[in-house]
Length: 196
Image 1 (cartoon, rainbow, N blue to C red):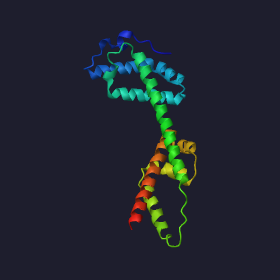
Image 2: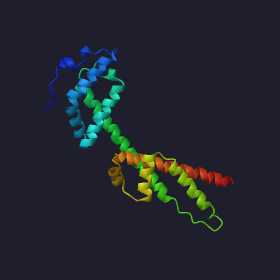
Image 3: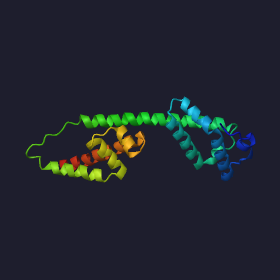
Image 4: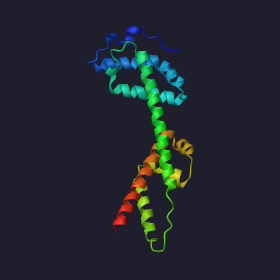
């Protein structure tokens, strides 16, 4: 059950834009008072329980950076709900964009024909492996673990997310970063070989 809070404590009456401490106190009280209302609104938008909680927490973190944004609002509840809904929409768009981008990178990687090395070009194979190995070792530790689990161990993204206790978005983001770094390393290698 939501704690009843007096309107005087939450609405803009006491907060001045120039006083960050008062604005922060106002923000903290509003988030505490309207937390469940904000979550319900985000849930109604089609998000899951954990996503709704993440949206509200992300909203709080963003507003903590500039707490004066909550001052001079006629209704803090409406402002917070509207802001959370907008943040939820932005996150959904970003997830969709990242999924499309990652799929395009995956498709591109799969469309590259496997090179069959002639006897003359076999000497390049160890160099190529060394370039990829260097690129993979240069990845941040978590990114490297995710990439190796997905590409070498052939684990599913869901299994990686579960085993490493990270969000599925984190798995996708790290795989994309690793793929880009490997592709850039190979492009650089190819350009250097073309000059020789």
